Length: 307
Image (cartoon, rainbow, N blue to C red; front, side, top):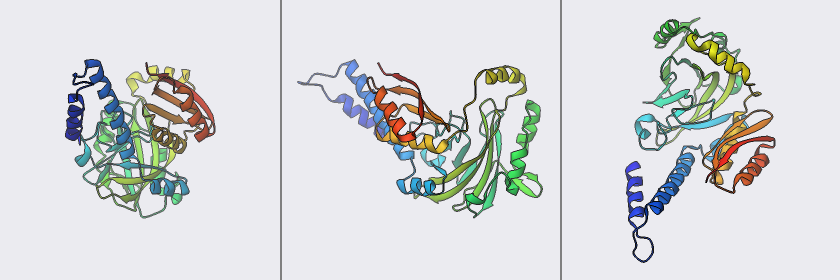
């Protein structure tokens, strides 16, 4: 795909502009910017679940995302990881965005860099409606307190090949089985700590998975001991928003994508939607109107207009 994109760009830039004149550097730059916008739109659409998946998840009051197999799509898409990673916290496939789950070689994975780690347990073929923080496999993860000292964290990480508690085995990677539900806790130091229940709804022909999920717990952000005091001060100075509404954020993001607003990120809580990023000049009011009509709640606008 990437090689095809390069050929496409070369062909467009090679085309002369009016009366056989070669395109100026400014014109070439604008063409590249326009192409990048088009590619980002296509990538976001490519990573979206199908309409039938969105509808099925909505009926169960669940969120949904697609996860690409890394071995097939890494370095083929512009987004880092090729859509093989996902952040429940940021509703993003970008590896840099608090990544909390990944797919490679038909395995689900958690814990990817530095001190970060996590747990996964296979619950079998059960409905997510029957999974809560009181579920036996979830109860340990709900009450688990991660260490903040790096040496203790390394000990915990070393157990992740097979972490057994009360005859239940948790791992940091497990085979991805269609129809199976999983419990997952992802601990990302200085960023996020969440407990989610997820289920592989189906598998596409290209190996990508359609995954339904729900949040069971959003824990206090864990901080490494050496910077804990600094981070605590910062955390206390910033009021934390109400309960995150991932389904609304995903719905708003999809509507913005349909309207070709590709550089807007969306966070949603029970009482407001926050918008960040950039929009074309003169389109600010349109974006806010679309979001208000879609989310039916207050909009906090932190957008900037492109010059």
